[in-house]
Image (cartoon, rainbow, N blue to C red; front, top):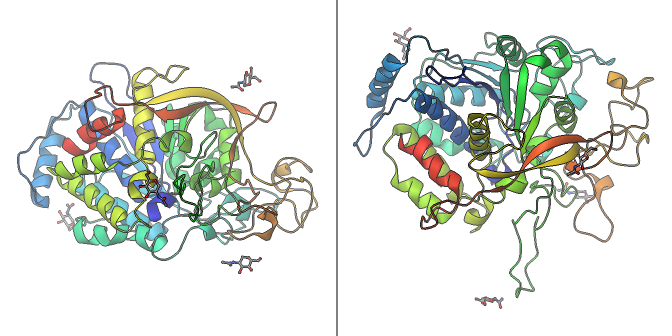
Length: 498
Ligand SMILES: *[C@@H]1O[C@H](CO)[C@@H](O)[C@H](O)[C@H]1NC(C)=O
Ligand SMILES: *[C@@H]1O[C@H](CO)[C@@H](O)[C@H](O)[C@H]1NC(C)=O
Ligand SMILES: *[C@@H]1O[C@H](CO)[C@@H](O)[C@H](O)[C@H]1NC(C)=O
Ligand SMILES: *[C@@H]1O[C@H](CO)[C@@H](O)[C@H](O)[C@H]1NC(C)=O
């Protein structure tokens, strides 16, 4: 179930400078993601895209390559990169949902080594904290949601409880179900808590260096902390692309056949995908739920935002046809690694629902974002893979009634004046979901709960933000193809075949 859960804690920051040789200046991209299985696809897609932009084609007829072959191919690739290329990349990781910092960094290092990219810096966490009066210290760690951070890296895991710790959760994701150790080659780099550059430093360095597009596919803690501590650098953030949330989404997971009276629906029609706590909070999606206050800061930052929520990703499940097409294209080592990761996710899925309840999430967002950028970032978000619509939304961070102090809200409870000068009685001042089984969230007479923490809710008025929202995946233009989504075909072409 790990994937379906798919909240990615591991903000991985990947700076991809796309090169258009002799064309417009490169798009600088910084990706903040966790290293969940779906994230691997997104990262590989971006890394491969980079290569595509260099117009370098790596082709091979070998059915199975051994890793040493890949290394030599990579060296050839490096040799053909034009010398005037700006091709800097950096990755940062913070671990407050699906993976733990050390495991995430190590898997990422190995992945980058496989791709011949030991040059990419990887940052994680930091030992700084947030004081009671809301002062954010430098190098503040992203190990906990903002609401629970104290003076040090100590904090509480109110939201993270919703992620299973054992199999189907962190244990599987940390090890990528064992596939990492079995297949992924190990390079020279490994996690080093003291020497690792911090997430905040990598974000500052990257965004100071020039206009940057930020991709967020994990929780928003790291980037929210960056924005709160470096308001002067906001002007360098060109656009934020987010995979997360659900606005008008209707989860197809766990719906019952019409003629089956014994079946009990699970999450069917919910906005969210929180499979461990939908009886308390059917509204939230894991990435946003991981730090609702952090996400609120990002959405309300004034920076233009494109959101790829469950509304769109629910319309691009990994179908059996896509799975088979992927299986047939195993000509590169990384394709083998990705496919084995996908296969084990399928084989360990909770029941026979994989093909209807496992979706493309981060990889789809990456495709939509690159296509929008390639089309010149038009206000209507015109792109090849998703239909777009502007909606006014906010992120719910606490539940009504506001201004009631019941011990659940550390921004207000026990403070003479609220943390970060928050408004008494404002939207952040209500009950905050305390965990996956919070009795406050029980809705009498219903199996679905009432808590909305982390809901990307459509609202109007002063607390709303106009956001470009992906509403559905576009069908394949080739109607004869068994791959029914345009992005399926493109993903296989870029991330798998090349
Ligand atoms: C790893 O480190 C060793 C010893 O420093 C060095 O000889 C080797 O070339 C390195 N390998 C790679 C792939 O960088
Ligand atoms: C429901 O309908 C389908 C298709 O008509 C049929 O195959 C299935 O056996 C039915 N299930 C029940 C529980 O009646
Ligand atoms: C969003 O808000 C703006 C300004 O308040 C309003 O003009 C517009 O109609 C709203 N759009 C939607 C889709 O609700
Ligand atoms: C959830 O809370 C209820 C009542 O507060 C309790 O009876 C139940 O055992 C809890 N379930 C879990 C899995 O902790």
